[in-house]
Amino acid sequence: MAELMDKIVSLSKRRGFVFPGSEIYGGFASTYDFGPLGFLLKKNIEKAWRYWNVESRTDVVEIEGAIFLHPKVWEASGHVGGFADVLVEDMVTHKRYRADHLIEEAGILENAGALKPKEIDEIIGNHHLKSPEGNQLSSAKLFNLLVKTHLGPVESDATVAYLKGESCQNIYVDYKSVQETTRRKLPFGIAQIGKAFRNEITVKNFLFRTREFEQMDMQYFVRPEDADNYYDEWKKNRDAFYTECMSFKKENIKWRQHAPDERAFYAKDAWDVQYKFGELGFQEIEGVHNRGTYDLDQHAKFSGQDLSYFDEETKKRFNPAVVECSGGFNRLFLATLFEFYKEEKERTVLAFPPRLAPYKAAVFPLLANKPQLVDKAREVYDALRKNFMIAWDDRGNIGKRYYSQDEIGTPYCITVDFDSLEKDNVTVRDRDTTTQERVAIKDLDSFLREKISMS
Image 1 (cartoon, one colour):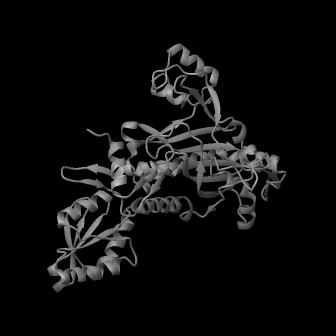
Image 2: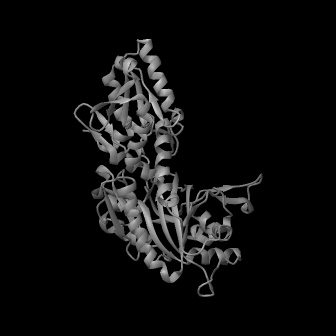
């Protein structure tokens, strides 16, 4: 029996959710393109995230930052000197592997990400760990994950630049401008959905780990003495986002606290939100971090600019602390497919809540060879698509059309039949229950709005 991941990968390509990047050339470096349905689902997930984190709140604003940042940004953030994975090399094939992944997959340790090269060498020696090909491994070495490039017509040390290793750095360098132009008082947040790039060695499990991805960041700026309280609030908020806003089952969400030696040196505390990805088990989809004042301290130091906040209540200046909620969009997208994928006796269903579904409804003529039914169905379709994403389907028999729409997550199928010509109503089939009801054509718009708002 095929594993769930294999089924989701197959469905994603076959139905137009996700395509391998540059596929006609054999694919490229674990890159993926969102197809027509994937694009619509992506935008609906982004809309849900934006509503929950920005639009429904009065204390958060959103920005969109550039992909290229001044190279000193990455020096200040610690990425140039410390953004690295520990790698080992197969001494025969010369392939390189993430050492922590090999140790975890061998069942030696559950979380090996905090190990130093010397510790990894000891584990490899003590457990006689080999490469996936069964060959001897080299000693462990650090490998920087930033993607380096050059800007300008001449390649030199002076033109070195980096693609964003994490999207949140725009927020820190724009913090002062945002605070002054919006006249925000603490506490307040800055949100962003932005691209990030990492020169990952191990790319696997479809969208779970790729070299190009999007991050969904919310950086909340607070008085340092208030950071712990707001940190607890945002952990509750993130739990509610997944179980309420995204409608994930509570049993599919788990929290894991980073051990002290696993956290970044500046972090006061760090937790991972984990999702149960079928046979992969619980894996991280978001990090919630108490970052202290490190980020603004560093950028003030390296830029020479005053990034302090003047507190009118205390009449003091200080650099705010940051509570961070940072999730990977690709992983959230993949988790959404896992969460709502269902197999029943005769059909496969993506049971998305209507507000997340790529298409809100599909319109069919009962018989595609009857012009009067096709014309009436087209009238219904054209009227609804002014306000909703609506699919048109007139292929094959009605049963196959239902199952085809079930597989891509369309919550309602609207069929125009001969009664529709006389009574000006249609049959509406519910994806989840497969029950049908007659609805007046004039009421379809309000019917869909109500169903979407309830989901």
